[in-house]
Amino acid sequence: MTTSDDDALRTQLEAAAFRRLLAHLSERSDVQNIDLMNLAGFCRNCLANWYREAAEAEGQAMSKDEARERVYGMPYEAWRQLHQKEASAEAVAAFAAAQPRHD
Image 1 (cartoon, one colour):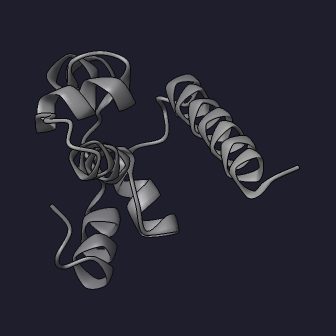
Image 2: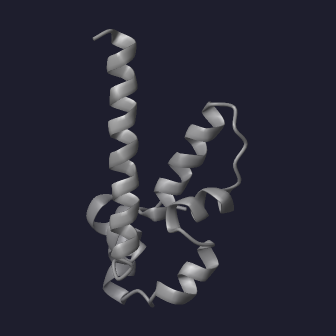
């Protein structure tokens, strides 16, 4: 197997893992972004930002809304209306203390 074959396989596996992560997050809409940020240091919005940055690095223009729709599986505002709950005061305080620069 050549290096390019190894790279192609790695890309395939990474893409499959990313698709599975998106499917898992879709199934777990009960898990709020603030909880993900507080526990793991990233959330669905971070994934969307990384996706958009990767597209742009490859010369593909992508808006923030387009990237979020790819990650959320629907327009972001629709997902928020369906699934986002009010964050507890404790979650907000933990987020503020640990993630002051998160968008």
